[in-house]
Image 1 (cartoon, rainbow, N blue to C red):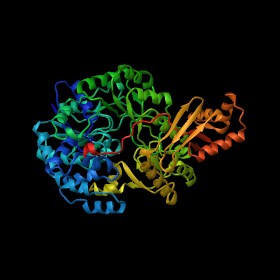
Image 2: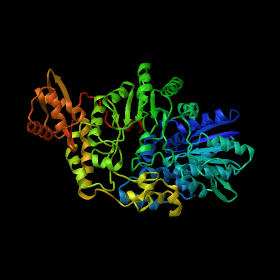
Image 3: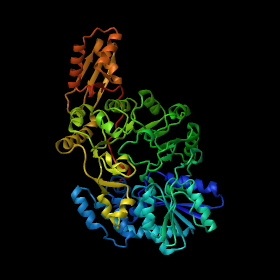
Image 4: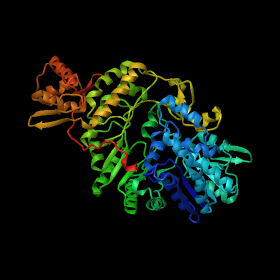
Length: 618
């Protein structure tokens, strides 16, 4: 059997498709007689645009439409005209949507005329491989491009078997996708490592796949959806990905000069925190929350093989959260290797300074710690299991260990109040030397999140997000099963407090690059050099108990706890004197206060900072 695996736009141009790499290996291992080929449509789309537009539409534009506009559906909209045979389909709705929200859409509109010819060219290239089965992986805005190509493939070759899978097919989304698009023969809901070989066996035998858990299939004119299983794929059955065909496609591509490629690896699936305390807004793990991890030595062996084979040192892990065992058996192995790797990891925000130091020593350069807020009560509403003070410590330690930290500041949680934000907003100017969030964002309602599954948490009314009106030509009841994002009534802060928050975060982002707040040891004294944006440059000298107090505040302390520590150190400091000093240091912006806890803000390190730029992909 010939199996052709496809990933369509808008997969990131600098990454291979982990899904294709895994399924390629799964099929080869389970069915060694089969021939497996791949089509990297996102890369081909960037090439197509570059050529057909005479260089006006470049790879950086693909990032702007396919990644930056993910919450506005622009990437899917570009291809919806090809899916519905109408180049102007949804254009008026998109224009109205964009005008209402101030969303720039000119680049997406400029791409739309190329979509139909691109889909036709893709179909020709895919069918040239003479496949028996074409398997699509779809996540985020890959649905419509994939559906447009699948429709064209079936129009040209009706006997071809088309299979969909991926995060967009989880749960009810997969069944809705199947029953609304008769040219899709099968949809794999959930993990594919067991389901795809089982389906291929049925296709070989010509039997109905009624026993493949979660699979959607056509029983005559009826769309059947097999019951999903709670069984998850064991780590031992998750293979190392095969990226050979991606490497060949990239190396021969005219887009190669625009791309800094990275390798994608997977150490774990699910979320160990979410198994016990599912963050209320998060729907990312879908129906597979159970945490599973490969042994650290095995993960290292996979990375070692991939790096040697592809000569690429940047490694992106897709784990939703790092396995804490990796601090014992994986990261020390990376350190001992002496390799100059550049790792990208998602972690929890309550890591210790020693753990962050180990990440840095291992070559980790970028982390996503899921900070989300700097106010403890709002973090409690999220069920994050961390405090605002701890999150500030994490930001500070990222500076100390030269870790780039990506995070979002979220708001709009049911039950939050203006007073949860006012003290945080007042202190944001003092944090300008620490890495800012991407912005302040009102949360959206995500399928699979506790906010979605339990209306009692505060979002009782919901409807498919408005952006889907310019993406799909489907009734709302079908969209209600198909889509991932929903509109709901606003909760939490609004008005003046919301405006103050967004403006303060914007100021933080604007002032960060040239702001510093640095410790310097001067014997027993402690100097703090302040060159933060918006402040007169100053150097503060702390001696005696003041210096010791600052050192203790690295870990965050309440006033009574700090007083006990200073007393143990031999300092006889009256409690009122200490309390007054803390308030003075707070007014200088040298401390952050979260409830009754104070955290020191100066950093011991000054990493190199690069201004944000998109020149590499422009």
